[in-house]
Image 1 (cartoon, one colour):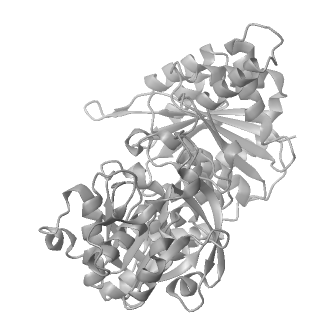
Image 2 (cartoon, rainbow, N blue to C red):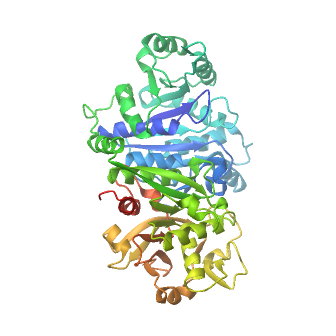
Image 3 (cartoon, rainbow, N blue to C red):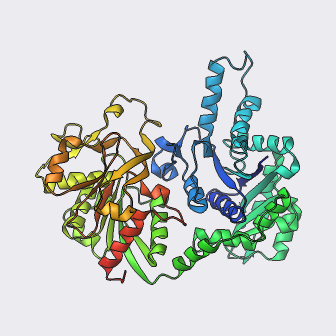
Length: 537
């Protein structure tokens, strides 16, 4: 039977429960223990797919087409293994399932209540990944902060699991904050004490307390926390601020978090984690030979989490190329033909980011034109690829009113059109083209050189596509459609062969980039930017 670890948070949000969970899973994996992570989010949305990026950051998409929390991206980037629909559950999905069962008469006329019906459904999903023997350890991150009304059913379910399963099969890790008061020059433990007391009042008792801190915790503070929070002294873990999230597994190893888990669960594992590849990546990341500047043209740049996977992909590709990638955020809404030269000067590459809606669209088109005409390495993702198609249609094919029907339903030249099967859809949630789809690549193309293959699979999240009614016109004008979906014939990749590096893709390659396997498109894009910057390849 699998062992279960539950990660809760206290004092404040955004402490990094996902990073701690991913770091612990990485350490266990590096010791030969098979581990997976799942996230339970307390909001009532069925999934994050309908959320504005400003609300909750990017929506991460899995291989099987689930729209999930961005923490699943951290899980995949750390573990180098794909997650699925089962790895992310929301309150909305739980209630939807229970209500559907009630409508079907499955409760035999009983009054449906939070306990036991909602908690039973939560419990079923919490234990699901550990049922088939695939994983030795299942780590469950509970979203939100202890004390939130929304997360109470999840915490209650953890209490029940702690009570039902053998003690050696369940563990609770509580992440909290130890603030440093500069005026008093003191680390304060009281917020942590209150947080643990609040958790204990629900009947859940933590086995380990992980303390986020700006200043080192001395042994006296650790003993104080252990005494007042009723945990063993060695189970108070320091989680100091790190220069990069990829250092956190090493910090957790230093604090012996993996050893505490193995001892609690009585698991046999390698004497020490094998982090050879991880350390090699960190060495390159921390010792770049040069710096390049990449412009990120987006409409949600005020919130960095809106482009989390793209930013992490730049880190992976930068380390692979032994350069530091400095990302320059440029709001597409503020970009015009009049100021584009000033806004984009000094850049060594340009990425036009994904997104939805009409806001900032003309600025993205202006940015594409600048990159095309000035031979600046260009990379367009999803909407960014569509903007490249529109720009080429307007300025090369002479289709002055070329547009996407998303922004202009009455365009006389809808070079980006809605897929036929999407036209019949009225519901918003979970209805886009989602998940992994195959793509056939033309031999000898830039895409072929990048991937080294003619058949690939990448993840999608969109409703609109290249309009194949214009396919011949674009090909005759010099734009190469180097990747197509083999089943539908829909265009997946466009490129310009008379340009140092110009490629747009309908899919989201950033969703598959990991520390051990950086996305090829990002690696080659950064390599092209190095050449642009005059850095030796």
